Length: 455
Image 1 (cartoon, one colour):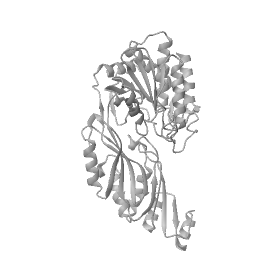
Image 2 (cartoon, rainbow, N blue to C red):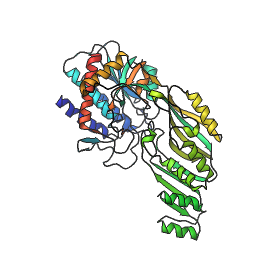
Image 3 (tube, rainbow, N blue to C red):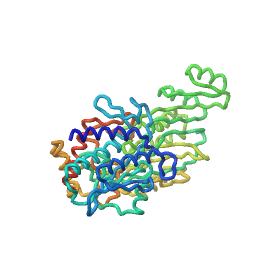
C-alpha cells in the first residue's frame, strides 16, 4: 500500500496545482478552462487503471468499473476562491511539516484522490467488482449543481453510494440548503457597500462608505478598523492623523473590515467582515440603517430574523450573509441558510419577508432538500464498520451536518469522510490543508469500505 499512497500524494499535489475555480465559460468548458483541466486530469487517472470514462462536454465526467447495478461514488473537482492570507500559495500543493497545503485538500480534491487510489489498489490486486462502480466527477458543486442537472438529462443516477465530502465516521443527515439573493431598499446613508466572494463562504473582507458622522468614525477607531475620510480641512487633518487618504468630495467615511473565512454551513467558525461593519455602525448609535441590519443578521442562528430553529440531532438553523453590494438603488445580500427538516424553505422565506419589510425582491439562487438515511441501514452500518476497523474507534456513531454534499442526489446516499471527529474543519478557509498521515488513513478507510460494499 505504501507505493499506492506515494503515488496518491503526487496526484493530489498535481491536482491542487490546477486552480479549478469558476471562471468564464468556453466551448467544452462551461465552468472555465481550469475546471476542465481538473476534469481531464482526473478522467485520465481513472482511465489509467481500467476505467471506462466519459466526459459530458465539460459539465461533469464519470468512470465505470465492472458490470451490474451501479454503486455511485460522487466527488467534485471545483473549489471556492482562495481568499484571505495563506502561509503558502493556495494552488502550489506545498508539502511542509507533514501537511499538504492548498485549496481543495479537504474539499474535495484530497478525498477524491484518496477514494480513487483506494479503488485503484483493489483493482490492481485482481479483485473483481460484484456490481458496477461509477465514479462521478462533478464540476459545479460549489456554485449551483448545474453539473448534476446535466448528468440527469442524459444518464440515470445510481440509487445508492456515497460522497467523500463531509465528515467521518459517516453522515446520515444533512440540513436543507437555501441560497437566496435578497434585494432591500438601499439605506439612504449607505453610499457603497461591498463584501464577500461566495454565498457559501463567511466573507473575510468588506467595505462600506457612509455619510460622515463623528460617532461612526469613533466607533470604527475603537474597533481598530481601517478608515478613510473625505471632505473639508477638518476631516483632512483627522485623516492625516489616521494615515488615511483624502479628497475634496462630500464628507464621507469609508470603513474596511477584515474577517476570517469559514464554510457557509458553519458561520460560527469564522468572523464575518460584513457583520463587523454592521456592528460598527450599530455601536456608533448614529446609524439607524446599520443598527437595523445588524440586529437582523448579527446572530448566525437567525434569531434576529425570527428564524431560530432547534434542529435536535440535525443541528440548528444557521444564517450566513456571504455577499453584499449596492446596485441600482438596492442593497443586495446573498444569504446562505441551512435549515433542519422541521422548517420548510417556504416558511423560511415568509419569516424573512416579515423580518425585512423593506424587501423589494427575494430570488432563490439554489436549493437542496434535506437528506436523511436511517442510521441503522446496511449502507450506513457498512461504512461505519469500515471506519471503526481502520481507526480502532469502536465508539464512533453516525452524525448529522449542515453541509450539502452530492450524497443527497442519491436515493440511498450518505457523505463519508474526510474530516475526522474532533478535527478542525478547514474547508473554505485560508491555509486549507491535510496531514499526510490523515490522507493515508483516508485511503485505508475507503479501501476497506469499497472492499466490503462492492467487491
